[in-house]
Length: 240
Image (cartoon, rainbow, N blue to C red; front, top):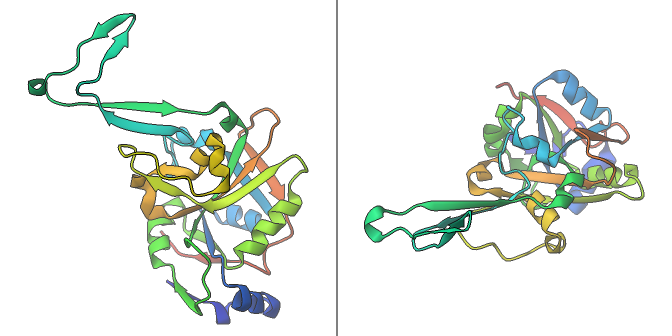
């Protein structure tokens, strides 16, 4: 599936903006047409970050929002109930020990997920077949947003004064390796950093996230209301 930015059924000013600034391309997949219509109407749903740990659906990730490390526990000294457990000897084999930490501030995070390019593109056409292949499991209705920058700006304008919004591609990591070097400003806040990190088995999805931080008591979901998206996005039926 290839997108030709010059032939999109979008207003001329949008096409010109894409030509000048490049396309920040985002794709969001929906299982039902009414969900896609609601999104296009400007009702943007953010699910609670930690709620994706046990959804029972395609987006489920038991380690969502958590700092996960997996290490070799041969020669490690473990204490349980005040009793020291002897380390494994070489002839007893090897094992792994998984640690998982969720930062308390994660209770205030909500996420809206997309498939997206790693960076903006000034190319006249873009092949997104790989994104569609890996993400169509989320649904056969795809909202394609070539002008993702304008979309994000509208979300910022719709947010409350006390809200904070962050956007960027998900960083995929090997939980058995050392923590990657911090690259983004919000990495100094651990709960935000791990809102943008997933284990490498999810890497084919190439997820791009917009994260909303809002402080009232935890809810299952939050909504931001923006103007209709028909001038910067369109819907495509990709089937499943």
